[in-house]
Length: 317
Image (tube, rainbow, N blue to C red; front, side, top):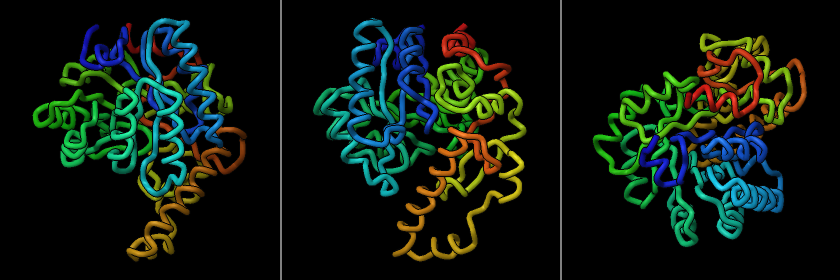
């Protein structure tokens, strides 16, 4: 299948394995490249810049050996990520096929990445930000809709894809609501140039997380996904476990009050982001009663834990 995304990254299928905090890793992306798709890893999955550099080098070598597919990294580009600049510098020095930006302005990323031939795709949830990305010279739009896992948008896949295709010239990669081939075909029929798929890959053999997290994606479905503010301060989709039900999904009242103060808001969000990421890390790597598992409604189609290759085959047929 040929689309603007496959042409841009030289892929066999218009599919990006979406970056997932603590879930995505080199092994998953390598399997994706063997299947002719692209894979992306959050830079924040690496504690040090040297670890990030090592991952980029390993994937570059793997791509040269495999001879197809593409790999990239995801950067959180707002003030909640104090490592953003050093991560960007490392990726530009080591090289990758693309960078996906999230939660902030991509201007600096676009400027630096383009100097070394790296493409920049940007998460957007509405037309206003999409047009800003286009004006800054971004290479593609990651259209995050209201069926996405993690931080999601407000518009339906159809509405967002058609809105962006009508008013923007950049390729549109739909993010959210794809768990099988029929749903992928639906996004392409709406006009998307490709899809970004995350949650179905949580329950993969290659994912470096607990069996309990993987099994939860098998046992729970779309009706079990809720939005919580307790991870990053911004609504994020999680599986509605007993612990999530116990603590609730709204930020603590003191945070809601402090968020109204313009001077303190930035620091409050940084604190909430740090606390939320730590809680997510614990849940992904060990079983405790404080279980916060990030996932989207597309786990509806996850019936068993299986290899990345089999999950991709479910998407592309």
